[in-house]
Length: 120
Image 1 (tube, rainbow, N blue to C red):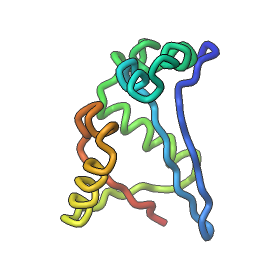
Image 2: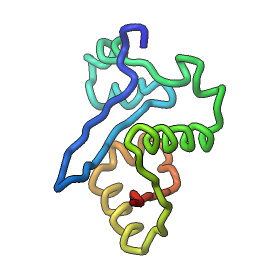
Image 3: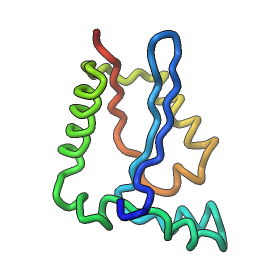
Image 4: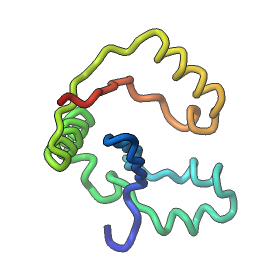
């Protein structure tokens, strides 16, 4: 986007399926970048952008944006995502990760869990 990075993403293929992990910054990440990169944060920040800075975030509600992403993945990969319930085990695992990685947990409130599984 204008020579700046918007999305961080990784995929791993495992036994005929894949795991997708990615992040799209909704707003500028100045505080987080300073915590991660210290004095080098300004240089990293200059190479990045986010949806708010691009004017995209204010055009869509968070829920509409999430729905757009889900539909795009379904279309590109010809799959269907199906919501499934969050278990107490999931909640405990999330709390453990937030304790283990406080830098990221403290950066912003955690979004509500909305797990999905791929339907066939």
